[in-house]
Image 1 (cartoon, rainbow, N blue to C red):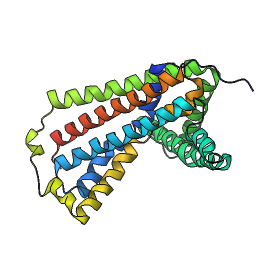
Image 2 (cartoon, rainbow, N blue to C red):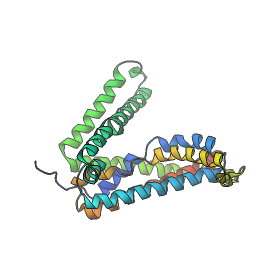
Image 3 (cartoon, helix red, strand yellow):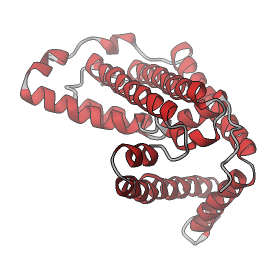
Image 4 (tube, helix red, strand yellow):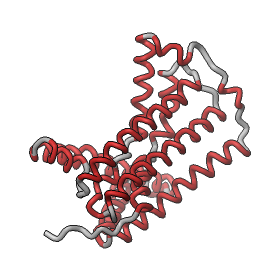
Length: 261
């Protein structure tokens, strides 16, 4: 079997990490956090810092593993080599069904629902499913046709996504009508973490944050197509995760500047 060409560089690999991490989670987690973090802004912000550090730790671990085993497959390869091929096989099936297929279907349906919102005539019929299926087929064909082309398209979409978030953050601070007084400490805040109930609430809030940070390992799945993987893969994982951490923290600063907890 001919191995895939190693033609993906640092920018594309890092863009894949960023694109896999940034989703709807960061835009919907604040309300859940407020419910579990005593409505204290600094407690809420701390969860994004802690979640980012945990994601960076995971990225660093995968960077080491990816450098040792620079082959496509991510944890499928690592579990197969560390334990037994059967463990890797089971992990692969879980990733295929739960980790990838379900989220791809959900994202495609969500995309189709947005299209239907812009074109109301498409809502309520089979058009939404047709649009979703067409999107999946088109993206699959693009990446199957040429990995480098698919990577460039992925990078372009990722840059656009990041730029939109940066513009949102800047606009929120410069022309927004928020109040930095929203960051005044409320209640017992972080001091509540010393209690069992407080620690449990903080851990629950951190679950939502962890979902938003998921995807930091994305570049490991394509290690077999990355140029100089021993050098490029660790940089891509850490760079992509670090960029997302910075975006998430600044986004939540703007959220709390705009609206009190």
